[in-house]
Image 1 (cartoon, one colour):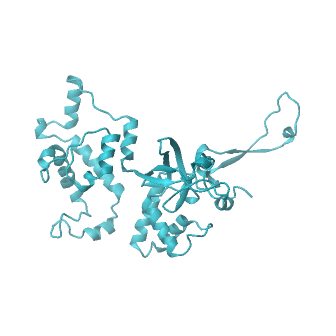
Image 2 (cartoon, helix red, strand yellow):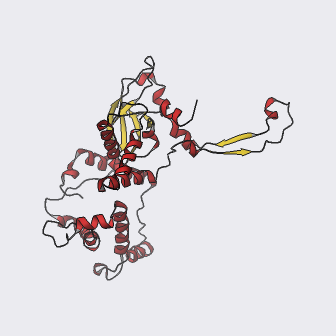
Image 3 (tube, helix red, strand yellow):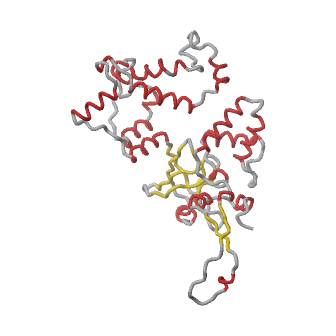
Length: 335
């Protein structure tokens, strides 16, 4: 059940709810929250017992007494998105463990336990596939054309937001040049995208070239970094790491600029949960003693007194896919 907000009426939202979540949509009458009374009451509880009591609450209008020094407090206390997530988890847990008069002074948890044991009502638990589907509701679907030809020395690729993307399947498929692909983009991490042909054939993940594919970053960060590069006339240099340069600029301005500190913190948060390798230092090498010879014909390998064993993970190898030769050379991957 939804209200008539413009975001809910968008075709993209309706299609995802009906096709991916397989739900039927019921738009309630305008300005009548009573038709969704249970969830509206719950949202009101979250607001009054949590969000509206935070130090950075700006109230509902300019005359709201709760505003106070909201902007000043927001700077002093540094309330972040993660803080609000933790607050929401706490509020939900408190709600489920608080006695409700409508439940005869029992908690929702107690009522659920009684119905499971006495009435045989099993709770509906989403499968891992459904959770993955729900997580992808904010993803964007974009159409792109495959460019590049082997005759010109350019491996096939697609371009998204000023950066090339490719994987092995596209790089060796000259027949895909000029065809349309649909890519699924996660706005919170565009270091890679998921590609499909017009016929629905899955082509796997395409990684962005260079540092763009090695570091997780959001669509917002990409646009800001390219804007910074354009303003400094450095975008066309193949040896300039745009994202790294933007991060360095934010660090230099952090002491004087609140905006720079906020943007820098957002970039660090985007990369906090990233498992992408960022250089040869991720390869752990160790010297090992030579192995005992086996019963076979002697060879030149048996005369080696020391060997070097390098543990290279699959994630590291996958992280190298699609990087430029300039980046590989600078990282010392070949000479």
